[in-house]
Image (cartoon, rainbow, N blue to C red; front, side, top):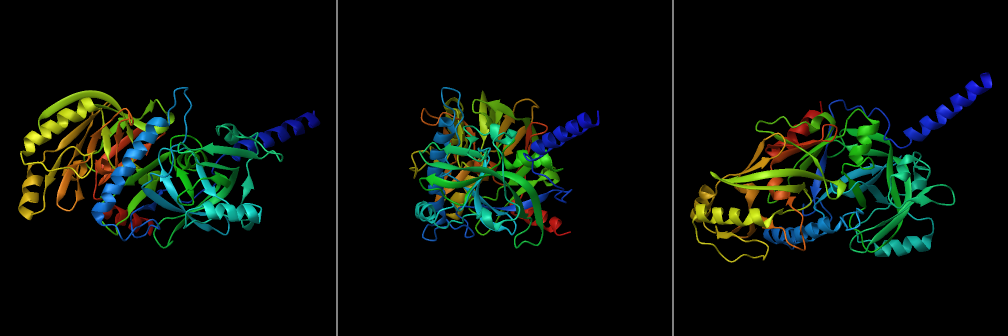
Length: 461
């Protein structure tokens, strides 16, 4: 009987270890949550900042990236029901993550359209290392697993490996993966665990340690990847949010507050745990739905849009995606909105600097800009399920894409990009919070630059 008891106890220990190795363990010591900095790709803090570009050049470049990303979002759902990863090149946001013990500082793409966390790792052979460094677009940092005391492999028989599409066992029973992106780039590596450290304020006055985070340690790739990897914030269990929710007291909650694209030297905030609660006045909540792309995207149902006192009903599924600068809506909705705006603004239009932008105005003088801004009506998005609404001001609907030229920052979906998307400009100066445990997303107007400073002051207490 004693032998049977010991055998059962051993089985229980093994099963517990197997389950726990899939989780981000540990008391991270942040009962009130924590906040970190989001770096826009065009910020002076970003290695991808191009000082030769004017502010308006950057806006037009971001619009072009929006087109590419919208097309990729559509192509990420294939006809045979297989969900592919969004290609990471049309990205907008970066975050710093410190990996390992001692930590290696890495700059990763923030992607709400991905359920993976993977980083570039140093390969074992010098020849492969030289080849990969030649392929990597500088600046690039590679994590060296051999230099960390907390690095560990994830066995291929663990649930975390089974959940990774296309993963298999290597000769040592490690979990090897091969990810193909839609532009033809690829990456291979081993699913591993490591301690991730986040700076809760710029400069590292407060740090948050999360042990045993599952991540892909990529040791080979084909093509050129920007940044040092990707931190997926998608709704899947393998994303950073999924792992924080399983293995810590933070819950599956996060939020962001994006400063306007035209504000230089200002940072946006990415909040986790209790700090992700959206409590500002005027908050509107709706349910997250499971869209055609499965569990990889955050999608909501839009019931109708109101421009001034004119309403346009058009039930449609919309992906909430901060990685796209523009908002894309069904043509049957965009066309009447554009005509109503044209009628209400009542000013002469000018030629658009981009074929994507349908409605542009000359605001080159103070008088023209004042007249334009006073004539642009509020736009209200009516969200399904709870019957709540989000009000958009002129900064959420128009963008200065060239000096003195203001254009409507929404475009119709097309055959090439047939997915409706709620983009960055529509979301800027809004606190947007996702609660995956409740299955909801909440929008509230906010001064994001001021909120950023407020959250970080709180974290110093």
